[in-house]
Image (tube, rainbow, N blue to C red):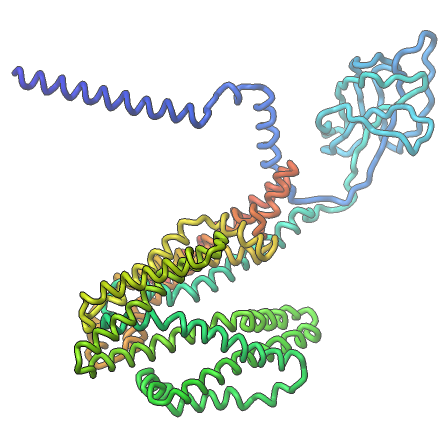
Length: 614
């Protein structure tokens, strides 16, 4: 009994302490977040909130052609000592305005009555001080908001006269009403919103398409079940790491030089494009001759004949440059002759221009892939045929030293550029040398023919990059790209593309990891290559979910484009931000309504498509 009592007391104390801790945490949270309920109680705040809500509830959807009607009523401010004599002011036919007083003191109230106006019209009331020159007259508002004309075409309101606006001459109270002279038609805000919402949809579409195209190959690298099977000998792995930068630099330089020269020849008009038709034909025939249909026979042929490999690389660089140059010339020509369809020519020009700009990068990828492929085959063959353990170990140590210098030197070089270090030896050279020495010493204790999980290394690197990119908000990416390419939808496309790659790369890779292993094992048992295994065993299982994820990502990008528009990324968000900053809440309400309609429509359409696919 005593034990139960102590146990109950213990639970009570623990509950009490936990409650105190929770209350303390939330109390401090209220303090940090500056929660104060006195501010929203103020009448001024409540009035502002009501005005904003009412404006948002009345989107500026329609407008009318209007005729401005001005009706003036004379008044003396202040009242004279003698009799009051006012001039007769002409008024438009059918409408009239009367004042309750012929004269009044400053800051006194008078009643303004009008009749003969269109029911539902909004009347603005102004005070017009006396000016000898009519061109200098000003209108001072007497009412905070328009007065709505009733169903009888009449209105009555009380206003307070301005202080300090006195004159011995008659002054005026002016009523301004805009009379509708046409049927309702879409407002300017509607046209602006339609233009920007179309821009937003295509902004998201292009970003989704580019992101999907780039994230598909990345997803295979980030799939553990595919990469875990990839391995290489330790000595071969060190060789791959050592030669990868050399292949990248050679490819970058070769494609930049040869490809850029080919593109310039075409765009300058010095040589007709038809004179270079032999280049892609020769490239295609060369690839066919060495077995382009089988990657293994192609690799073997290139290993045997380095001259043939160099020729193919030169032809590829020249062919890519020529294609880019021809596309630029053709795009400009089509832009000039297609008229309303000139955007097709501009599309061809932009794609070709991007190809020319990316020539060095494409060359770097091709050069690195070729160098890694050739070096991998040669190093594995060399390690297997070296009968001497000393020679095998010596080769591995040398490659390990070079690989260590690359692994440390490349990041160090990037940091030196980023932080503008002046002493390159201390910031790059010394760390690279230390990295080479450490990895070289470690290789002394590692057998050269030990299998290394190359695929897992690539997997973890790819996953890390995707996680880092996904952690950065598209809004931040948009700010960076706005600085690079300027304010507009192009910056939004780049920001959403980068974030799409990170997000879809993760989703796609996880889908690959969840596929059935049976087809993979069956295809592999037939002796198929890794590429054939992916094409015939992996892709058929992932096509439906890939399409569903892509459509869903387009939906997300449409909503995200609204946010990045606030950072200058174009689209409907940019227009929405402008109207909110200018306190144009009725126009902003139109953009909010358009966003809601588009998002809801895309959600419904994407749901129907996913139902049919999955």
